[in-house]
Length: 251
Image 1 (cartoon, helix red, strand yellow):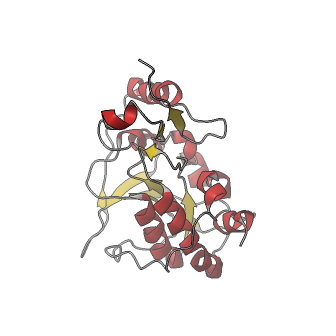
Image 2: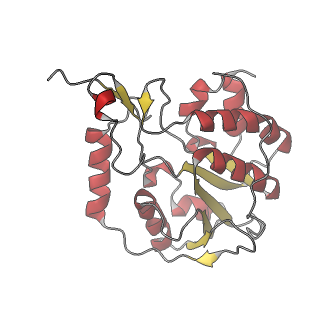
Image 3: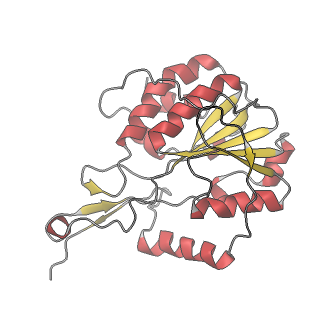
Protein backbone atom coordinates (compact mmCIF):
# COMPACT_ATOMS: atom_id res chain seq x y z
CA UNK A 1 0.00 0.00 0.00
CA UNK A 2 1.17 3.52 -0.72
CA UNK A 3 1.38 6.19 1.96
CA UNK A 4 -1.78 7.82 0.55
CA UNK A 5 -3.68 4.52 0.64
CA UNK A 6 -2.61 3.87 4.21
CA UNK A 7 -3.60 7.39 5.23
CA UNK A 8 -6.99 7.02 3.58
CA UNK A 9 -7.56 3.81 5.55
CA UNK A 10 -7.28 5.86 8.74
CA UNK A 11 -8.93 8.96 7.29
CA UNK A 12 -11.54 7.71 4.81
CA UNK A 13 -12.85 10.32 2.41
CA UNK A 14 -16.40 9.98 3.68
CA UNK A 15 -15.38 9.64 7.32
CA UNK A 16 -17.06 12.05 9.71
CA UNK A 17 -13.88 12.50 11.79
CA UNK A 18 -11.27 12.30 9.02
CA UNK A 19 -10.55 16.08 9.02
CA UNK A 20 -9.01 15.69 12.47
CA UNK A 21 -6.58 12.88 11.59
CA UNK A 22 -3.00 14.19 11.75
CA UNK A 23 -1.06 13.24 8.60
CA UNK A 24 2.38 13.75 10.17
CA UNK A 25 3.50 10.17 10.78
CA UNK A 26 1.85 8.79 7.66
CA UNK A 27 4.53 10.53 5.60
CA UNK A 28 6.99 8.05 7.12
CA UNK A 29 4.68 5.03 7.26
CA UNK A 30 6.59 2.99 4.69
CA UNK A 31 9.98 3.47 6.36
CA UNK A 32 11.34 0.20 7.70
CA UNK A 33 9.63 -3.17 7.68
CA UNK A 34 6.06 -3.68 8.91
CA UNK A 35 5.70 -5.18 12.34
CA UNK A 36 3.76 -8.26 13.36
CA UNK A 37 0.01 -8.26 13.76
CA UNK A 38 -0.86 -6.25 16.86
CA UNK A 39 -2.22 -8.16 19.86
CA UNK A 40 -5.49 -7.32 21.58
CA UNK A 41 -5.12 -4.69 24.30
CA UNK A 42 -6.16 -6.10 27.70
CA UNK A 43 -8.24 -4.37 30.34
CA UNK A 44 -10.81 -2.69 28.09
CA UNK A 45 -13.62 -5.21 28.50
CA UNK A 46 -15.67 -2.72 30.52
CA UNK A 47 -15.54 0.08 27.96
CA UNK A 48 -19.17 -0.34 26.97
CA UNK A 49 -20.68 0.49 23.59
CA UNK A 50 -19.88 3.19 21.07
CA UNK A 51 -23.17 5.02 20.44
CA UNK A 52 -23.16 8.54 21.92
CA UNK A 53 -19.62 8.09 23.31
CA UNK A 54 -16.33 9.57 22.05
CA UNK A 55 -13.10 8.09 23.40
CA UNK A 56 -9.76 9.78 24.04
CA UNK A 57 -6.96 7.24 24.42
CA UNK A 58 -3.91 8.77 26.13
CA UNK A 59 -1.42 5.92 26.43
CA UNK A 60 2.11 5.44 25.08
CA UNK A 61 1.54 5.91 21.35
CA UNK A 62 1.86 2.35 20.12
CA UNK A 63 -0.40 1.21 22.97
CA UNK A 64 -2.97 3.82 21.94
CA UNK A 65 -2.98 2.29 18.45
CA UNK A 66 -3.39 -1.22 19.88
CA UNK A 67 -6.16 -0.10 22.23
CA UNK A 68 -7.99 1.64 19.37
CA UNK A 69 -7.74 -1.49 17.23
CA UNK A 70 -9.21 -3.49 20.12
CA UNK A 71 -12.30 -1.29 20.49
CA UNK A 72 -12.80 -0.46 16.81
CA UNK A 73 -14.97 -3.55 16.16
CA UNK A 74 -17.37 -2.18 18.81
CA UNK A 75 -18.03 0.83 16.59
CA UNK A 76 -15.24 3.36 17.18
CA UNK A 77 -13.30 5.02 14.35
CA UNK A 78 -9.62 5.48 15.33
CA UNK A 79 -8.49 9.10 14.86
CA UNK A 80 -4.69 9.40 15.23
CA UNK A 81 -3.62 12.80 16.60
CA UNK A 82 0.13 12.15 16.71
CA UNK A 83 1.97 15.29 15.57
CA UNK A 84 5.65 14.75 16.48
CA UNK A 85 8.19 14.14 13.72
CA UNK A 86 10.65 11.23 13.77
CA UNK A 87 14.40 11.69 13.42
CA UNK A 88 17.56 9.61 13.27
CA UNK A 89 19.18 12.04 15.73
CA UNK A 90 18.99 11.80 19.50
CA UNK A 91 15.32 12.61 20.16
CA UNK A 92 13.09 13.56 23.04
CA UNK A 93 10.33 11.16 21.94
CA UNK A 94 10.89 8.04 19.85
CA UNK A 95 7.87 7.90 17.54
CA UNK A 96 9.05 5.02 15.33
CA UNK A 97 7.15 2.45 17.46
CA UNK A 98 3.99 4.46 16.73
CA UNK A 99 4.73 4.48 13.00
CA UNK A 100 5.26 0.71 13.02
CA UNK A 101 2.07 0.18 15.04
CA UNK A 102 0.03 2.29 12.61
CA UNK A 103 1.40 0.37 9.66
CA UNK A 104 0.84 -3.00 11.31
CA UNK A 105 -2.73 -2.08 12.26
CA UNK A 106 -3.69 -0.78 8.80
CA UNK A 107 -4.87 -4.11 7.30
CA UNK A 108 -7.07 -4.78 10.33
CA UNK A 109 -8.60 -1.29 10.17
CA UNK A 110 -9.22 -1.67 6.43
CA UNK A 111 -11.24 -4.88 6.76
CA UNK A 112 -13.49 -3.45 9.47
CA UNK A 113 -15.32 -1.25 6.94
CA UNK A 114 -16.41 1.07 9.73
CA UNK A 115 -19.46 3.22 9.20
CA UNK A 116 -18.73 6.83 8.24
CA UNK A 117 -20.86 7.76 11.24
CA UNK A 118 -18.89 5.64 13.74
CA UNK A 119 -18.06 7.36 17.01
CA UNK A 120 -14.49 8.74 17.25
CA UNK A 121 -11.62 7.33 19.28
CA UNK A 122 -8.91 10.01 19.41
CA UNK A 123 -5.37 8.67 19.82
CA UNK A 124 -2.66 10.54 21.72
CA UNK A 125 0.86 9.62 22.80
CA UNK A 126 1.10 9.99 26.57
CA UNK A 127 4.87 10.50 26.16
CA UNK A 128 4.40 13.52 23.88
CA UNK A 129 5.94 15.92 26.40
CA UNK A 130 9.15 13.88 26.59
CA UNK A 131 10.80 12.61 29.76
CA UNK A 132 10.52 15.01 32.73
CA UNK A 133 13.17 17.70 32.45
CA UNK A 134 14.37 16.22 29.17
CA UNK A 135 17.79 17.35 28.06
CA UNK A 136 20.43 15.30 26.24
CA UNK A 137 23.50 14.30 28.19
CA UNK A 138 26.10 17.10 28.10
CA UNK A 139 28.51 14.92 26.16
CA UNK A 140 25.88 14.60 23.42
CA UNK A 141 24.36 18.06 23.63
CA UNK A 142 27.69 19.85 23.21
CA UNK A 143 29.01 17.68 20.37
CA UNK A 144 26.06 16.44 18.30
CA UNK A 145 22.81 17.93 17.04
CA UNK A 146 19.68 16.68 18.82
CA UNK A 147 16.03 16.70 17.77
CA UNK A 148 13.42 18.22 20.05
CA UNK A 149 10.09 16.75 18.99
CA UNK A 150 8.14 17.21 22.21
CA UNK A 151 4.58 18.11 21.36
CA UNK A 152 1.41 19.51 22.88
CA UNK A 153 -2.27 18.77 22.36
CA UNK A 154 -4.59 21.76 21.93
CA UNK A 155 -8.39 22.09 22.04
CA UNK A 156 -8.25 22.97 18.33
CA UNK A 157 -6.92 19.45 17.66
CA UNK A 158 -10.36 18.06 18.55
CA UNK A 159 -13.93 18.71 17.41
CA UNK A 160 -15.85 21.17 19.53
CA UNK A 161 -18.53 20.00 21.93
CA UNK A 162 -21.10 21.48 19.53
CA UNK A 163 -19.74 19.37 16.66
CA UNK A 164 -19.74 16.23 18.82
CA UNK A 165 -23.29 16.87 20.02
CA UNK A 166 -24.38 17.54 16.45
CA UNK A 167 -23.49 13.92 15.72
CA UNK A 168 -25.11 12.46 18.81
CA UNK A 169 -22.12 12.42 21.17
CA UNK A 170 -23.05 13.23 24.77
CA UNK A 171 -20.19 11.53 26.65
CA UNK A 172 -16.40 11.45 26.43
CA UNK A 173 -14.45 8.53 27.89
CA UNK A 174 -10.77 9.13 28.70
CA UNK A 175 -8.68 5.96 28.63
CA UNK A 176 -5.37 6.36 30.44
CA UNK A 177 -3.29 5.13 33.34
CA UNK A 178 -3.76 7.26 36.43
CA UNK A 179 -6.63 9.52 37.39
CA UNK A 180 -5.17 12.92 36.49
CA UNK A 181 -5.37 14.02 32.84
CA UNK A 182 -2.24 15.53 31.33
CA UNK A 183 -1.96 19.28 31.65
CA UNK A 184 -2.46 20.07 27.97
CA UNK A 185 -5.47 17.77 27.66
CA UNK A 186 -7.23 19.34 30.66
CA UNK A 187 -8.14 22.40 28.59
CA UNK A 188 -9.95 20.32 25.97
CA UNK A 189 -11.75 18.18 28.54
CA UNK A 190 -12.80 21.18 30.60
CA UNK A 191 -14.20 22.98 27.57
CA UNK A 192 -16.18 19.90 26.60
CA UNK A 193 -17.45 19.56 30.15
CA UNK A 194 -18.37 23.25 30.28
CA UNK A 195 -20.32 22.82 27.06
CA UNK A 196 -22.37 19.95 28.39
CA UNK A 197 -20.50 16.73 27.64
CA UNK A 198 -20.08 14.19 30.45
CA UNK A 199 -16.43 13.24 31.06
CA UNK A 200 -15.59 9.77 32.37
CA UNK A 201 -12.34 7.89 32.97
CA UNK A 202 -11.36 4.29 32.36
CA UNK A 203 -8.03 2.97 33.67
CA UNK A 204 -7.34 -0.25 31.74
CA UNK A 205 -7.25 -3.29 33.96
CA UNK A 206 -9.18 -6.33 35.19
CA UNK A 207 -12.81 -5.49 35.97
CA UNK A 208 -12.21 -1.83 35.06
CA UNK A 209 -15.33 0.24 34.59
CA UNK A 210 -15.82 3.88 33.56
CA UNK A 211 -15.89 6.33 36.46
CA UNK A 212 -16.97 9.98 36.60
CA UNK A 213 -14.05 12.32 35.91
CA UNK A 214 -14.97 15.89 36.84
CA UNK A 215 -12.47 18.34 35.35
CA UNK A 216 -11.51 21.29 37.49
CA UNK A 217 -11.59 24.74 35.97
CA UNK A 218 -8.75 25.11 33.49
CA UNK A 219 -6.44 28.07 33.97
CA UNK A 220 -6.45 30.24 30.83
CA UNK A 221 -3.04 31.62 31.75
CA UNK A 222 -1.70 28.06 31.84
CA UNK A 223 -3.13 27.49 28.36
CA UNK A 224 -1.36 30.58 27.04
CA UNK A 225 1.85 29.34 28.67
CA UNK A 226 1.48 26.06 26.81
CA UNK A 227 0.97 27.93 23.55
CA UNK A 228 4.03 30.05 24.17
CA UNK A 229 6.12 26.97 24.91
CA UNK A 230 4.85 25.37 21.70
CA UNK A 231 5.52 28.30 19.41
CA UNK A 232 8.73 29.65 20.94
CA UNK A 233 10.54 27.03 23.00
CA UNK A 234 9.69 24.20 20.65
CA UNK A 235 7.95 25.70 17.62
CA UNK A 236 5.94 23.47 15.29
CA UNK A 237 7.09 23.31 11.71
CA UNK A 238 5.03 24.82 8.92
CA UNK A 239 2.96 21.63 8.60
CA UNK A 240 1.91 21.83 12.23
CA UNK A 241 4.27 18.99 13.09
CA UNK A 242 6.54 19.31 16.10
CA UNK A 243 10.25 18.89 15.65
CA UNK A 244 13.35 21.05 15.43
CA UNK A 245 17.05 20.33 15.32
CA UNK A 246 19.15 21.90 18.07
CA UNK A 247 22.78 22.29 17.05
CA UNK A 248 25.68 22.17 19.51
CA UNK A 249 26.68 25.50 20.99
CA UNK A 250 29.93 26.87 19.71
CA UNK A 251 30.93 28.16 23.12
